[in-house]
Amino acid sequence: MSAKDSAAPRRGRPPIEAAESHARILDAVYELLQERSVRDLTMEAVAKRAGVGKPTLYKWWPTKAALVFAMFKERIAIVLPPPSAGTAEEAIREVARALIGPLNGQLGKVLSELIAEGQSEPAILQDLFDKHIRGHEEANTADIERGKKSGELASDVDPQLIIDAVFGAIFYRLLFRTAPLTEEFSDKLVRQVFRGARARAGEATTRSKRRRVKPK
Image (cartoon, rainbow, N blue to C red; front, side, top):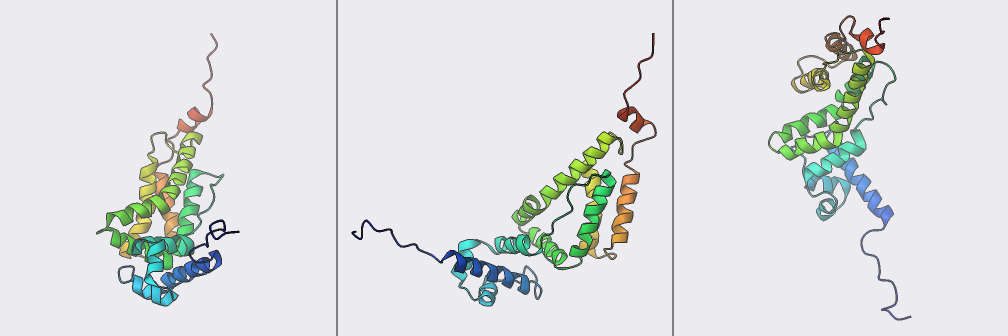
């Protein structure tokens, strides 16, 4: 068999070695962000901590923000509760509760810093919303729409306003640190928001039962 007929040698690192380098790099980002902010993080520092060359970083992640998002997704992003079979209020309360602990830790730190970076680089905010928030918001909207159909909530309730009221208040406390983020706070917040969104007396009955036809 001639050299022309033989298979060309594969270039690049073997899959196992590449996977190990990938894991070391994300570990390095996670560790460094416990010591410094996203703004102060550098590709040089990540490469040195991970024991790889800078070209390796840029081959997989073209920007620092892309690298931080990769770590965010694989190391600290949380899995929120599955859709609840209960009321819309119960579903939103479960999600709000699930956020509190992580937001008081590394998740909250990195999220705050990404939001800060996004003030001068709007693309960061867009990526953060598209890749990590939009899906949760759509699930929350579905829960609220279910509450409207069941008669739990008023028919004219705007799901986006409920989402903004609940999660906007949580992020307000995260960013401004006006008061502690606790489960007690999130429970009271959800209860208060849904109190104003409940169906008015008689509306639930009208929507959940067919109207009786008066005999002629």
